[in-house]
Image 1 (cartoon, protein in one colour):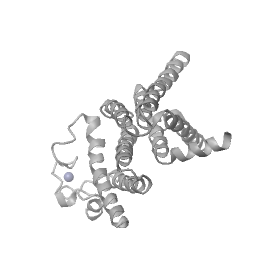
Image 2 (cartoon, helix red, strand yellow; image 1 turned 45 degrees about the vertical axis):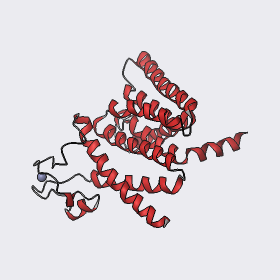
Image 3 (cartoon, protein in one colour; image 1 turned 180 degrees about the vertical axis):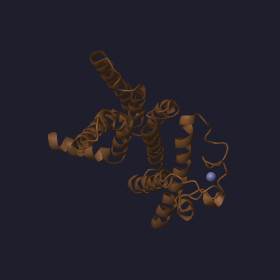
Image 4 (cartoon, protein in one colour; image 1 turned 135 degrees about the vertical axis):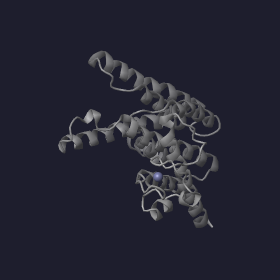
Length: 255
Ligand SMILES: [Zn+2]
């Protein structure tokens, strides 16, 4: 029974991933995510419902449009696969259906922000601003509770804003976008200030490792290698899943 549920949840996750692909493609273009249905970006032909099956559609079309044979980005099945895996992981980890929905909604937003930041170097307000409100509303009834959520918003947004300001005053160049500020505020709203700080630590750590690796491989200026929002998204996903465990372990270690 639990196995059947897990399979269903994973399949549902890939369908949600398919919708996330639509958001990733259309939100930066300021197009509606609801209407019209999916079209080939090359020839404009409508995607047939039976070709629109997550992952499988890409495989049996061998990564090409049925009409014009233009290649379809590998990013589509990857996003569907990752979303399916995240749904399965969350289903196995969280017993409470309410917390499951809260964390999955958050994870979906992080996946969309990750890809959009990677491709366009922007973090759209249409995700982060409603995200801050949604995170706070969930926290009225669920962990981390509205106090931790509110502190997370102020501390998360505030700390990055302050860092950006200081960087700008000292170096006279834009180091941190305002999109990152709103994104960390959203992370604080959903996860509370403790997991928000953990996200910041994990993201900075990951950023340093990638940065050093880039220098070692001589791939040029690390500052422009990857946008900070992509690291925030990965850090937040890790914090959302295993963050409580890390904090408990750390506390036991030091007190
Ligand atoms: Zn086409």
